[in-house]
Length: 201
Length: 189
Image (cartoon, rainbow over all chains, first blue to last red; front, side, top):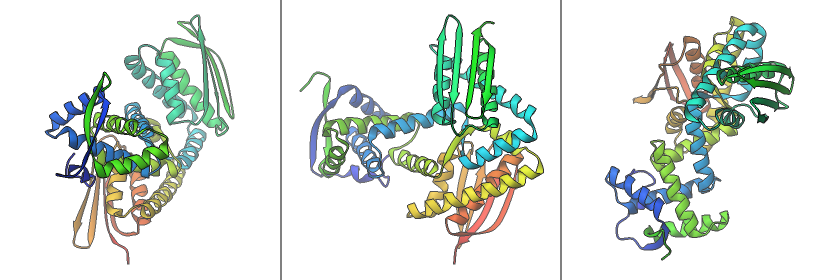
């Protein structure tokens, strides 16, 4: 952590100011400093420099934290970056060329994701999965209604072509199946997907 | 002092910069300091130093600014395995995407070589190794991935070629096989 290009914080004999900051945060950073063999002063000042740099690049510390948390989730989900235009074109071509294989794979990806979320978000795996998919991958609106063992999912996105919508529906079906739901009705078209499912059906 | 608070020292120089930033953001100075500490902890949770985390955020910003999406690797691999016509189209589009990223990074960065390495390391976490070596005026980039298929490697190779060209280097030699990419290049004229 020290000796970096952000290392202005490691100055000796410079003027200092004292702040009363949240004890829980300082205890955690103090623990980290101990683990790494640094002083809490160095750690706090480097963190501050990092936040200032983030600010200079147009981000608040809280937005930067959010971006780092998103990165962690994306890595966990097995998502990799791709140029969006390339992705959209490629999906279209792949769907036209090998529709069955594409549907099978997207369904498998849905199942895999559902199992991952089932293991890590026991409280609401379906809700968390849909929220993360909305945030990271498909710029679409996803609405979910649940109750009495039933789930209704509505996805709308102006950028959804028929191919994208059909494949996304396959992914959702795979996820629902893995979470113990049976799809009872499905409507798919350019710009929308609507699925209804019942648990254990 | 309030209950649950503890004293912390901050360098006066940084304090002045923090004051300016906090004012612009509508934060109190102490909230800015606390948020900065939380940010440092968040970076540490990911295994990043603040400096590294800063590079990561810049690379993610570049990815977003250029219209990047995050997609399931399995699906991307399947797409890369498509028929010959699709393959050619994807390789072309991949090179163009790399070129656009390279040009963007060139405009934004003081050190294009470091930008190249960092960009690949932080946005392509499917790569297990990214190394750049210098031999005289020539540079050699080596990328290794254990999860790539041959087609996915080929696709990334084209992206990397475009990236290097976009950064203003001349690509001299490209060598790839499943999971490994080696590109030799030198500074442009």
